[in-house]
Length: 606
Image 1 (cartoon, rainbow, N blue to C red):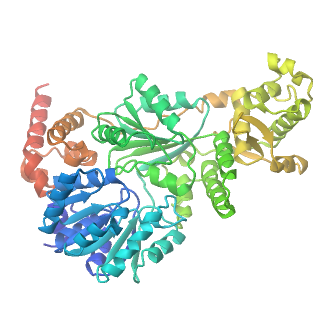
Image 2: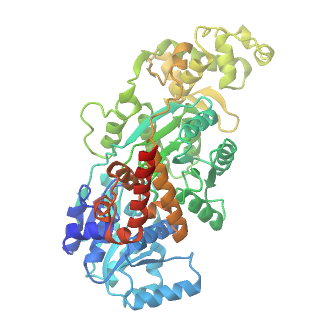
Image 3: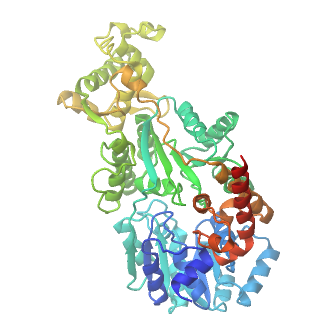
């Protein structure tokens, strides 16, 4: 069977994605391979297809237990013998799988890196006709990656035990330094490198200034009520609170964080991948290993710590290739909070690294240029030519405005308030002073007698909050983590003394009330749900529930979309649809063809 025949027979596709064929051929040639493909770029197929075309067992090392089950479910749906060994199994289930491995019943075995040093497992691996080692999420081996896991460095011990076995290392996010670490710490032998484009043209990137963050999130999710989404947050409390508020607004949601019991996390993830709930609120620190291709949007409710993490998390959206949205809600207060935590890091090198990563993330949030090009440049890739046409800056180019006077007024006001009272005040109080509002606190603290009282009356409150946010982003103003009060930093004092010029971007920075109104959170277009698509989605859900698997294991949204476009009414025509392999044709073909036929009949009779 040729590669193309195997691709169609097992996975239902007639074309490889970029670099997939080259990676598969290099892996089957017997050498070590490092492959960098963007999330949704088809990394798994690069080791799954060789496992089906060659005898023996492919060992897949993956950091996430839940993701193992998802991948095994998807492989079994395509008739591919695969299994996993991890702590979620009871002793009886583990014993059955070990016995099947001894019989040579599986082509792929998924394990966590910790298992690769267990004596019992190593003894079994010596018996199982090991053919290849595939290391997924290989960036975890590097301290310079965004998700370093020390246990990944134990994997190298397999090289001495199985010196003739080739290794395939795969990741979606790795800078040049991380790639070097992958090769070094996995002890790879002159590996061939394949680096695909990091561009995900189906993803639309946008940054929105936080004003009323909860209200913004509710607006965003309500506009996409029938779609699946992930909301990333910094804290467990935020995950819990937002999930509760979304559910109260009629948008089914659950939290996902390290504070939940393992059974709770597993249950919440199962509800999400089975389309029983629409939104998962997950902590950035804990992350989510899911293989759900129909996530239509990812919202970063809080600022990510680094660009690599942001890129990987946004990559959870649109894995099926359909249009999806990535929104970052940003405020200067987020930057101040991150800086507070960074200052608590005792190791100077770790502190410097965290500061550098934060600066890079802030640069992305503040850029006035194409966000896609910004991301591509970060990973060492040339940006798109001109405008990408699918990010907020390209769709609604911001205007650079002179913010020097408003910045100086804000800095002076914060400084005078602290100098007069001996203590700092919060952002809303500072804005009240700038606007000349005689509130109880302003009068009680004598701030109505300051030279800065009322010097900003020409601006709206929202505009001043945007100015303060920008000053916090640039490091001229910081916010106390404990009391959320503002103070001018050394950098801000230098800016005042040096009469530094400031430039802000509109529409993110808004100088006039009327322009703020025109800058409300824009709802980006989502995939249109037609009647046939809904009917096929319902059929897919019933079939998936009957088999106890997630709906996408039956067919992806992309396959359903193609079915809606082509509307095949014979099994032969159905087999030509992308994602329809021979096993799925046999299992599901008749049901879907009949659904399409009945839809055509009903449509014709209307």
